[in-house]
Image 1 (cartoon, rainbow, N blue to C red):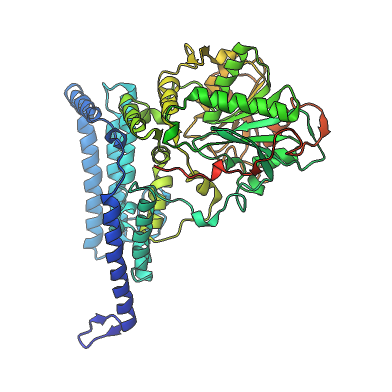
Image 2 (cartoon, helix red, strand yellow; image 1 turned 135 degrees about the vertical axis):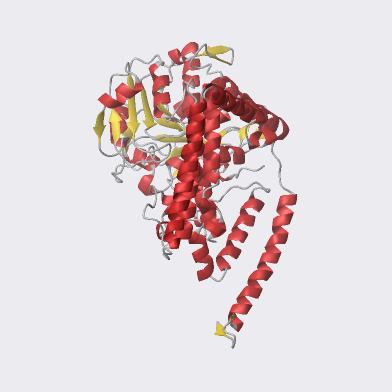
Length: 601
C-alpha cells in the first residue's frame, strides 16, 4: 500500500491486481450461483418446516395465557425489557466515560464466542450480550406457554431453538470477528474462496445446501478407509456379503455376521486400523461377515421391510451357514439394522428357525413411545411431506435425512462448518468420521413409509405387533441371548428408549451396556483409545434413571466386555476359514462395489 499527498491510503499495484482478480472471480461465481439456484431441485414444501397451524395454535395458547395469567406475560416482558435496557445503559455509561472497552460481564462461555474480541471489544461484546438476552427471552416464553399439547410444545421448542441458533451473530459476516479478521489478512481472498465453496456444495447437491463436512479428496475406499482385507462372497439385489480374511491361525467355530444401518455405509465399523471394530473382531479370532447394502435408486421404490428381511437378513444368515458349514451364527445389528434384526428374530421364532445363536444390538430403538428430539420429524405434516416426496422420486433422498439429523445438532453440523467453509474460505478437514457421515444412502419409498408410519409413529412392534410377511412380529418373540449397547449422549437413539425396548424383549439372558459419548463415537470406541467408559447393571427391571444410578462404571472401552460375552457364545477354536475355501465364488475384493455407489437425487 502507498500513501498519497492527501494522506489517503492508496492500494499498491499488486493489491489492485489482487482486487481486480477477486472481482472477476466474484462475477464468474455469481453467474454460477444464479444458474444453480435457477435449476435447484425442489422437495415437497412440507419438508421445509412445520405447518402454519402450529404457530397459530402457539399464538392462541399465548393469548389464552395472557388472559388467564397476565402477570406471567407481564413478568416476561418486564424481564426482557429490563435486561435489554440495563445492558444498553451500561454500555452508554462506559462510552460516556470515554472508555472504548467492553463491559466486565462477558456472559456465559460458549465456544461460538471463543474469539477474545467477543469479550474485549465493545461492539462485539454488545452484540453478543444482546443476542443472549433475546435468546433467553424467546426460550423462556416458549417454556412457559401453557394449554398446548405436549407433542406440539416439543415441536415449538425445537423450532424456537432453531431460530435462536440461526440468528447467532457468528452466522453473519458483519458480526463475526473471526471471518472479518481472516478477510483482512487475505485481502478478501477468504471471502472469494468461501463463495466458491458455497457454490461447489450447491452444485454437488442440485441446489440443495448441504455443508460439506470433510475433504472428499482425502479418502479412497480400500486405500485409506475401509481397508480390512476380505472378499465379497455373495451378491444379490439388496446387498453384498463380505467375508474378512482371518489374522489368526484359529477362529471361533460360530461365525459372526454384522448388519450395519442402510441409511449410511457399513465402513463406519472399519474406518481405519486404529479404530476398526472389524479388525478388532478378526484379531480376536472371529470369522466376521459384513453386509454392504445397496444404495437404492428409483427402481427400488417398491422394496419394503420384508425385502430387507428376506433378501437381506435371512439370505445372509443362510449363506453364512452354508459357507462355514455351521448351523448357527451370532448376529449384530446397528441402529435401524438392529431394529430390523429384532423383526427378523421374531419372524424366525414363529417359523421355528433357530439359526441365530445370540444377538447384539448397537444403539437400536424398538420402542418408539417417547420420540424425544425426533418429535418434530414424526408428526403427520412432516410424514405427509415424506410420502409425497417418495411418491414422486421413488426413494427418500439421502440429502433429506442428512439435513434432518444435522438440524438436531445444528451448531456443530451446519452453522459451525458453514462459517469455516463459506465465510473463512477453509477447506473441510480430512476427517474419516465426517467423510463417512457425508456418504449417505437413499431409502426405498415403501420401506421408508413402513418404518416411519408403522414403527415410529404407531409403535407397532412394541405394542400390538408389526404386520409383515403374514406374521405379527413382536418384541416378546426376541428370545435369544441378547447384548444391547446404547450411548449415553446419543441424540438419535436415546439410551433410555433403547433400554425400554430391551425390557420388553422375551430373552431370559439379557445384558445391557451404556457407553459414554454419542451415536457413533460411543460405538467406535477402541480399547487403545481409553477415552470413554461404560455402565453396567444386571437388574433390567429398574426404571432407566434407577438403572443408571445403581450401575457400575468401568473406565475404558466396552469392546472387551462384549468380547468376553461373545466368546462364551462362539464355540471352540477351529482352523481359520479363508474366503473362497467354500462353494461360494469370490466376486471381488473388499470393500466391494455396492459401497462405492453415491446417493443421487
